[in-house]
Image 1 (cartoon, one colour):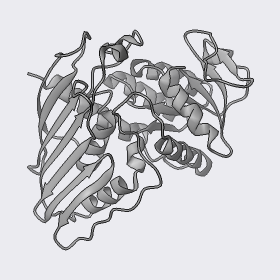
Image 2 (tube, helix red, strand yellow; image 1 turned 120 degrees about the horizontal axis):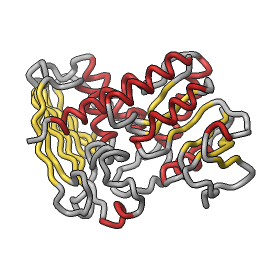
Image 3 (tube, rainbow, N blue to C red; image 1 turned 45 degrees about the vertical axis):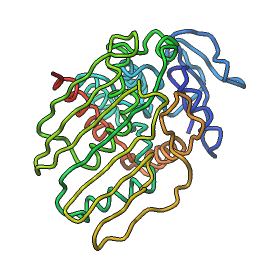
Length: 325
């Protein structure tokens, strides 16, 4: 699999590191609004301002631009018949997400999204237990994603903390992975009420907020997302049902008190990025997503996280923003 990465920011560096560890995959080019060669790029690879200017043969693109630009990269790739792996979230508006999905479907190419927390063995095990109704009727699910970013983080790039390109604050950015898990586990709620504010940063979007959610089965959920919780804390999910309770932190089951069901936790193959800082040092999750993407193309099957599935997480995030009081 030969990739062109669209975007040359921090997340592009993560993909370079991940691809370097994988057999049969390579990066042959970059597309950047600035034609300068990124400092982390070594070797003879194309660097161009548009995908059409890439001369090296390639099979797929990795979208590593600000989220509000993902639909543009997907459209350009689909027009060339190239497969698409998008960094999270899929995009920041319903129209843009639908356009991406439609463009890839019409071109007959795969569209996958890097919600790599789904690759965690414990998250997959918990998903199976929930699907099998191992906790019985679900009463409550409480998700806390309290991270920390200082002002310099938001000042490091002009799109950070903006509505048009970033799409919002921690709900669509730092907590997006965890909200994807919430959506994957529990589906979309029928009612959302939320409150948010910009309390500690000079940005145009929220830096802290809380949402209250009610599902069709009566389950009540809560989601807190923040970038002002100094020094930053592990993401935590608590699930309570008629047979007991489960607590997971940073994609590991830490508490299992469920009547009649054994703890399915397993030792993971590697760490999943905690989100407590902007840098991703361990690329285990991205490697797993990349390998799944290659297999999906090779075997002509759906990737682990399809565009349609990733759209549900963004749909929930948009409902949280729209439900703010």
